[in-house]
Length: 131
Image (cartoon, rainbow, N blue to C red; front, top):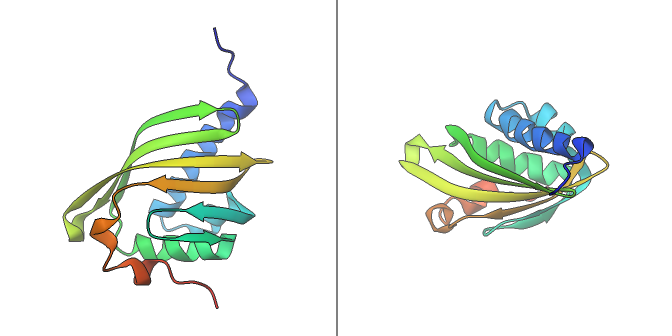
């Protein structure tokens, strides 16, 4: 029988709140969940730093319609979310998973798993690097 650490269970709520803030275009709140040196890894880009991740989310939110979290798992300091990103203008339901690592209550790593082919043409618009 496994024991759930209540402190760690709170990070599931933090992970969900991060995505809710993204959908609500509340980028200040969204950034508050991120570690300053957050490491983002996805099929189309890899980046470090809160500013870069928030900028990518701002660009993505221009076409993002809905986020439906279908399942969530907790293991130690990691949360795995399985979700659908809905893009009505692209007529696309992007089935995805995100593995989020937490350090001191902040998201320190985000690793996304999805088929990136529908975004190849928009890649440079979404993942603009801070200069």
